[in-house]
Picture 1 (cartoon, rainbow, N blue to C red):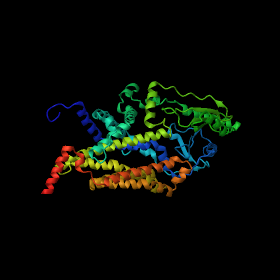
Picture 2: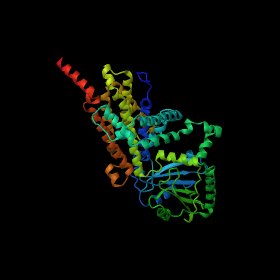
Picture 3: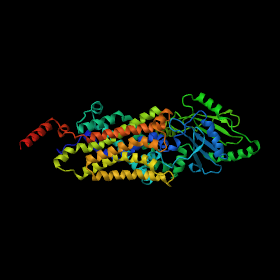
Picture 4: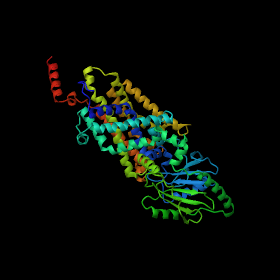
Length: 550
């Protein structure tokens, strides 16, 4: 209801809804967008945070050396899995299962192998990029279920804010092509509109798909009604459970080794099989090798396509060969998915970017950056829009001050905390027990310190100091990498190790962005006359003239 007693129209109601749905959980949404955007390169971040792996440079003999290494490391295993190096990782990720091992991840042992020599590498303990990825939807600092509930509610608010924002701004597409610099509130509104429109399809898809990923927790009634509360059975069926496949393969492994005591079979050379697969997949090549029952007369070698083209997990093709003779075998066809499984898998793949090659992944990353700027600019706009009201009052209301503090800590403070996390990765002693938890603690301590700094320092100075600190911390990360065992940026570029070089280049861009923002904050504030209309400018000039005469 308006002050004159008339009912508000749809756009006015949506404007109120857009403002408050975006503000109430805006700081959390900014953190979710920021860490989610970084998670598009979770593998590259993890690779950079393990400098022991940087000197691993793949060559044409990488697969052969990895197979030989596994014959020494796990000769009695029932399964070997080798994820070969690609544009996102430099070393070979090896995993294996021993006979009788527990079903699931707990029974899997892992190691990293040097892609050039096949030697086992012992990297430092770190959560790497997976911490940022898990924080994106679990918040980490609280029980997992609570974190997911909070993020789910925040995502609902985000969807409401997007839809109400589109309804509110009737000239949103026209104003997208308009940007008026150095105009105070008008400039912030233009920036918010532009970043909202340029990636609007991305914002809608990523928000809606994020809600779908949490749907079974947010709306569990259907699962409980059909499965009588047995959620494990539901998730097993939704993923296309394999039943007792793990035990069957392990049983086969034991029988195979008994036969080998007589037959003494050896694996066929992997090189010719790789050539067949390369001819089959000339664009992408082989991404992983799975050896079932190695050392057994019934062994098989599975070659899987690098980065499957499908949205759902397991979308890549696979070739299967006899492990003894190298003869091609008919590959087991993947389990046929129901329409519901296909839709669920597709939405998951869209949200996580499983389908994306490097160029598309960069586009998703840039869209995420735009979304992060949209969320941040909206929160800053709330403060800027209320500056005239504060001038009239002659003071800053406590609610406005609270928003100012949270804006600084949530935006600039999160950047400082993220840079601190990367610095801690190199400065915390490698042999320290529980060092991965120490790295994460450094992240939260730095974030908390930024909150306290924003409370005790003037608003403008806190922005300037935290943005400047973030710019400096990001800018020095490539040097820190070079002096703490990592491959220097020029060397990484020369060796085509773009998972390492790309990280260094991105943090340099982040340093430039934060430095530019700090420079803009350090500039003299925009004159009050630029934020008001023509009549307001006239009144402002009259007031100034009267003040000069007095």
